[in-house]
Length: 142
Image (cartoon, rainbow, N blue to C red; front, side, top):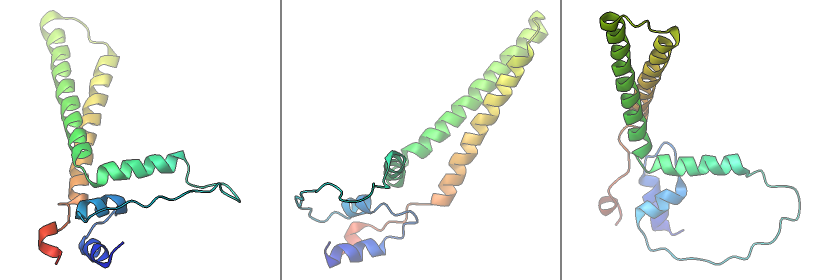
């Protein structure tokens, strides 16, 4: 890593730092270094599959608003569909005198509350993350 890269990365005020993404985002020239890896001589690696998935999840969520939008749209869709189905059950009961089974109202309630929870989760995440606090690369690199 060059000093310019380190200085540029220090100016980023990220809360959760995904260093590989930050290095790529800064936009300096990249080169590769080939390394021959030897077999581990002692012990077993603690970098297991769940940690790898955690890193992948962090990489996706650190540099994209897609998961946040996906949660918002899924919550909105769930809530709207449950409201429509709830009105359908009410309509069936009032106008056609068809008895609504207990599980129907419970399922509508569960889906509605689940949708609202996704919406609130997406809202809280947007507040916590705030605007992504990266600088414009053209302004800070001299």
